[in-house]
Structures are given as structure tokens and as C-alpha cells.
Length: 374
Image (cartoon, rainbow, N blue to C red; front, side, top):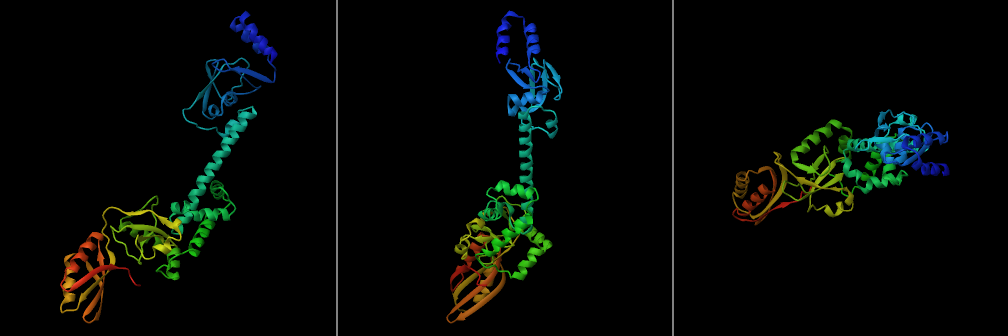
């Protein structure tokens, strides 16, 4: 670069126009030397365009390039730079990214490599997004909450089993069609089936019907909205109330991802909770919300001393508190009688008031909520 240093030293003996002309004449034919608006020199391959210049300045400048000015005039991006040109790059505020067409406009390997790297990353990002969406759809069709499954160690185990160390690479493979999302969903389903901690209250035949009957799933999903329960981070998922503890609005509750049945709602004090906790990744946050017109079945037991017209007084108390009796069972062992009722209530407050009134009935010494025995 001795010649360039000599030219710069001679600048003081020439006017600016003469110096610039000398610079243009003396440059090598296979390179062009251009200037930034601040006077910094950039050497580029002959035939380079404003895009080459932009990437020579900084990768971010290249990615945000929307136009260029050469010697104060706007030029197209395919304009071939000449030695001595003063180049100003016009940029967008946010990164827009290069298009594939830019590869035909650039001459330098730096610009070409930066553009290709961006396009490759963009294709990977698109494939990853597509893979996530496809897998969510496949999991949802299995009646499982996709977002909950995606965040669980369960899917991570399946991913490693299929040979992927990084989740991004796994989703990219799904998005590129190298892995069937249905296959992944089936593997997740089978792992849930193998690890089911608590036996469900539906037979395998009933379960198969739920899995195969899309209309039935849709019907149950619509009914779930009447429960007045929201599942954090999940929309449009099947919800069912556990028959083992029969929660009602106001009860502290948890959600549990159940085999083929979406999310099962349990009371926090459910008798099966210890068994359920063997698979902590299957719990999800749920809560009661808003008003709903749904009635909830609850079992109550009333222990009393046997007397005439006791059942009549108990029935009147249920009616006065707005609680409907579905079933009643009486077991007498003189002088005591145990009355078991299956009733419908609107929420835990109505249930509390009903139990309080029952305890005040003459000869009743206790009334309480019980866990179903069947």
C-alpha cells in the first residue's frame, strides 16, 4: 500500500479534484477503492455493488440496506462501484434481511457468505416454527394439551430417544418433513400410557372410543367450557372432573394430564394425589373462573341417631338450601343410621351452607363430604 500512502502525502500539493483523479487512475484494475461519507477507504473487488460495500462496513448494515447513494445521488443496488466513489448506504430502522436475489448482485465472498448464512438461518427458523405447529396439532388430536406436553420432560425424553440433543434441531426435522409429527405424538401417548399412575374410571373400550371419535371429543370440549375452569397457557383442550374426588367451584384444584382424556381436574386433597405426584411433569395450573350454570355431583354422609321422620327432615333441609338429591342410601344399625346422599351443588359455598344446616337437624351428630367409593 506504499503507492496509496504516497498519494495521500501528495494530497497537500494538489487540489481535491486533482487528487481524486490521480487516485482513480493509479488503482489496480482488479480492485476498486471507495470511500465512506466520513472518508474511510474500503477496497472491494472490481464489479462490486453498493451491497458489497454495505457488508464491508458491517453485517448489520448489509442486512438493513434498502438503498444507496453514490456521490450524493441515489443509485440502484446493481450499480457497479468505481474507484473514488463516495458511497452512503440507506438503511431501515429494523433488520429486513436480504433476499435470495441479492446473491446475483454481489461480487465479494464476504457479502455472499453473509447473505447465504442469513437465508439458511431464516429457512431453519421457518422450519422450526412449522415443526412446532405441526407437532402441537398432532398432540392436540390425541386429546392432550400441546403446550403442557411441549414443556414437559416427557417430550424431551422422546426427543433424545429419536437421536436429537437439541430441541431446535428436533423441531426443524419435523418442519422439514424428516420426522412425522404423528409418530412423535404416538410416542408421547404411549409413554403416558405406560406411566399412568392411577387407573382411570373409564374402560379401555370407552377410552378407545374417546380417542377415535372426533365428534365426541369436540362435544366434550364444548361442555368443558361450562365448568368455568381455565387452564394456564392452554386453549381448546378437553377437561373432565375427576370422579375420585368430584371437585366443585371453590375447591383448591390441580390439573393432571390424563391418558387420552385431556386434563383431569382433581381436588388438591384428593386421595390419589400421592400416586399422581409420581409424574410431576403432568401437572398443570388450573383455576375456577367466572360464573357458570353447571351443577356438580358431590357425595355427603349424614350420621345420626335413628328416629321417625328423620329422612323427611333431611330432605327438607336439602330442598331449603337449593341442593338436589340424585341418589340416597340408608344403612341402619340400631340405634344409629348412616345416610349417604349423591347431590348436585353449584359451588363449595352452597355445599358448606348445606352441610352446616344438616348438622343442625335434630338427632344428627355429623354431616360431611366423602370421597366416592366407586
